[in-house]
Length: 150
Image (cartoon, rainbow, N blue to C red; front, side, top):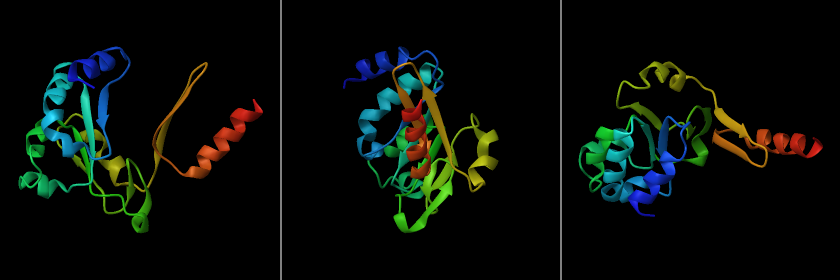
């Protein structure tokens, strides 16, 4: 999609407070994400970015154009998901992943990011269901059964 199309789609959702960049690998497209990020921030929205790269490598300029995008990101979750390090952590799935607060916007949530807990947001509409976050698959299976029974 073109940046203009994405911005139009974002603007159509009046109730959101931000945008999340997630995989594949968003920073593999950092050069193209830069103008999008600028526009998102100019709308007063936040940006959370998941990347398999490490912040230290981004800061060392090892990922082309990725360092430039950091000034627009509020929260960066770095590191690849590793199944053997799977853990019940908010906003991430494995212990090697780190949450970096790059701006003060969500700094008040830092203690939450240090706890061992998972979080998911569930939005139920008349004809649709949206689940965002990291949660145990058993919860999803249980929710599907509940919905079928109603």
